[in-house]
Image 1: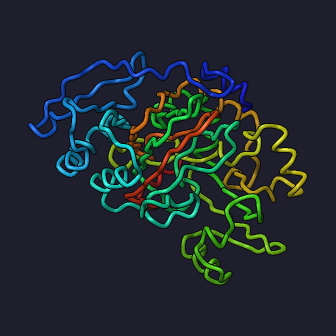
Image 2: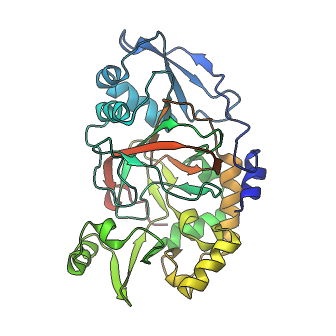
Image 3: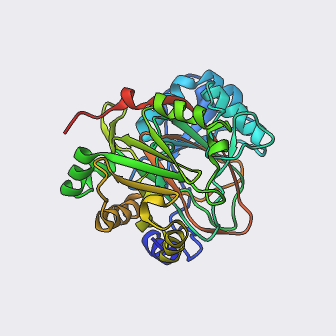
Length: 363
């Protein structure tokens, strides 16, 4: 989907500024204990979904780290119900404050993620994906193309971009009702094969991703995690065969859980797609690709159907300095719209899950 198509689909400016980003929320009482009444909740103004829940302090100076430590159960209840929770107006400014808050919510933050650069001022937090400002990062559930993934993900706004840069959210449970049944059946029955070629200079190196310089260690790790790998003229090619639909572990509902937009070449703008094909020589040799599980192609038409639905059904908010949004990664997929000017978002994730724990029933 091109920048102009994204702008049209989302009602944003060509640089990606959303028109639905106001947070004039509807306040709603929450019957919790005295500690929890230090915060108030609301929904996005005009939103047709309850994702995300917006949480603000009821009085200045609320210590969000202390609140998080005392209210893990309340936080989990909100997150399971809404799929995402946005914490706003708590006066946070720096990434170490963010890490302290999310560590109180999820003590087992994952500190070994190979796809994102580490945040220098933190221990288990990362920079957001480095990607050209004028291009969108399309919808995905974090690490859903791998044998394990975080079920909890957090984003922190250090510097909001002056134009664009929103992080749209998509309800992966609700979207199941919107996808054409024939398209959905193909994904459910055929499942997926993610292909990744670690092309030098194009993507993160396999050495950085696997945290080793030893090819035999990579081969052993891939085999242990159920992935296949091969070396083609010094380029590592990894394949992971996995489901496109999964069962949400707390809600016991099916969710459309995958990264097909990030991996399918039709989701690149035409110039980038052609440039990569010229560089790599074929679709199978692209840095990232996704096929059906029987290794037949997913049609561009099926992908266009999903692309259109995602932008029709997503919800957006405009980042403000100090915002933290917590995402149930199995309930909500996220994207990033194009932007102009400076922008800094840091990321944390934790509570890892595996394929066996969330496998959907055979169709």
